[in-house]
Length: 218
Image 1 (cartoon, rainbow, N blue to C red):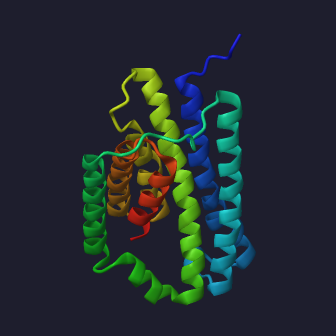
Image 2: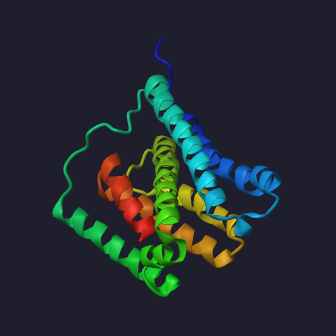
Image 3: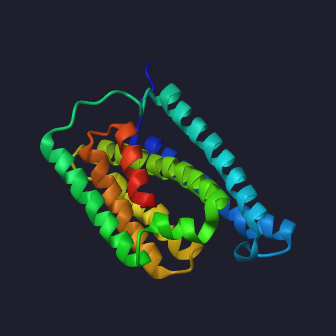
């Protein structure tokens, strides 16, 4: 008999992705401060880069394990080809990107990517954005598996469940990691928009990643 795949199976994968993101907190707030003898805000360039490299390696391993487990155990291949997008879907995506850029511009008092380049310098900027790339991949998995689980539970596929789950996990977690309620709420709002994007691109994982990364770092 074939194994029945239930919503909780996919929901668990989403939670594993969230837990994978949370491993960074162990590095940043426990292990590395103990090793360096200083808190994260006082690290030098080398220490910041080492942190980003270790985190990226960890997140890469977590991503590989989750995606392969999903394909092997549940026959759910997130890279499966999807149908082409219609014009109205592209318009919806563009609107979401513009709104995201506007909110980010207002929040940063300028373009985030330019501000960070000015603050970090070339070397740290490169590793910081490599870190963002891996973070995008993992929080995208929270969205994908969260969406799949709720579609099974409620048997409706046109509601952005994944964005809601992402907002309640990765989004609101910024309240604790950044120590700022406003940042957490903005991240939750952005996460909700990510859920809409995923549906607009017909669950095409490559388009989803590219658009989410642009919205996240811009």
